[in-house]
Image (cartoon, rainbow, N blue to C red; front, side, top):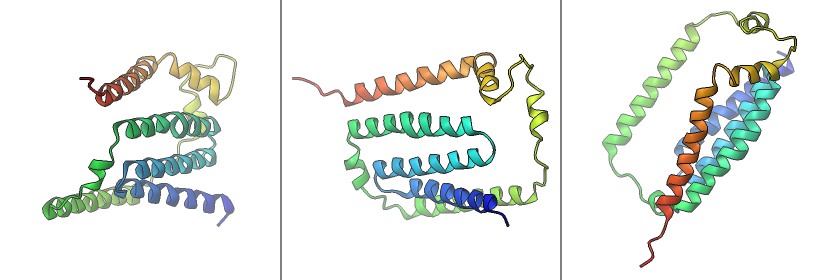
Length: 175
């Protein structure tokens, strides 16, 4: 077993454990901090999969900008009272645990049975017309501003609406 495989396994384990920790945190701030760890582990996985630009975007955009926005909204809305209340319904906890175990079993079964070989890098690059510049960044830029322009702009409008909505929800009434 080589070192790259060990780092991949460790980063995968950290991503899975921190994602599960994010789900089971009692306070929203701790949940967001667990999500930061998940994003950094995913960035390590991207580097190991020969996608350094995606790793940099993962750290700068998601772990940096978007999670800071999440923390800002959580602190602005002051969600500490909701986090202090505990769920006492045993039936809901049981059904959610059964659902999580069933979904996890399905995912493990599908992953175990899938034996598809990895797609060669040259085959995925041939789907995009060449413009004389080779590399990951020009290819992503070309895709982002041609095929995926509408989803990219829709996401920016959605984030803007989330910020405006958080500000409106936290607005105090002056009497």
